[in-house]
Length: 92
Figure 1 (cartoon, rainbow, N blue to C red):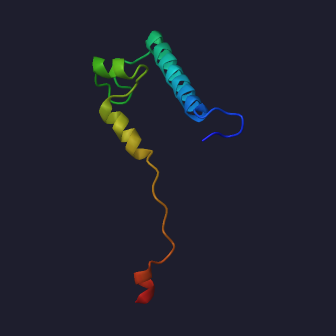
Figure 2: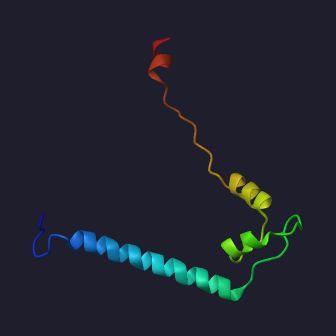
Figure 3: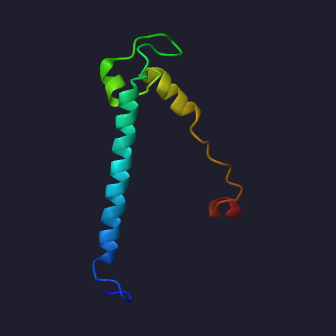
């Protein structure tokens, strides 16, 4: 389906270009972090060694897997209170 002066595949082409640009930006950022080599060898909180595989997978990492997962769970947003009553509660 054509839209105005655009070709039929213009939308798909723009999506592909946007995706390619995003992937390129992510790869460049990862390469910059890897070049900096600022990954810690030991966890900043518990001082346990950080495995080499984790440091390669996540350049710039400062926490071990256990400490990072603790931080992730602590920052998880909690659900708000549902102030509306359910239909069943209204029928009682």
